[in-house]
Length: 152
Image (spheres, rainbow, N blue to C red):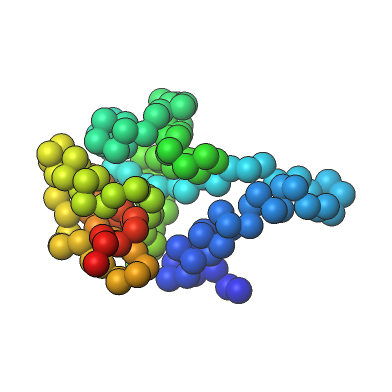
């Protein structure tokens, strides 16, 4: 598979799904995977981005490097981190979306709205599959709450 911005979410989810198996399988000599994935996100203002991910989304800052204008953010998903990089030359079409799995999309949306998050539209429900509520971080990076659909 050729990696493009349009297939990055699928590729990332595939990597997250197989990562534990790769770490525990017999990999070729010298090739050992750690059970972590870091999603790199370019931001225009590191302070503003750190405040959003820490205070609004309740993630933990595990490292901050002023000399590199970079911060590591631990999510509530074991092994999944976000790397915030100010002034990054990363660019793309905006097709990549980071989905954060939550137990109850409606409840999580209410909490984030009370913290000033503006959602991009109504919660999308795919019956029997998933509920999705999209929003952006202060730099316009696309984020989404994903969880079980409401009972019918």
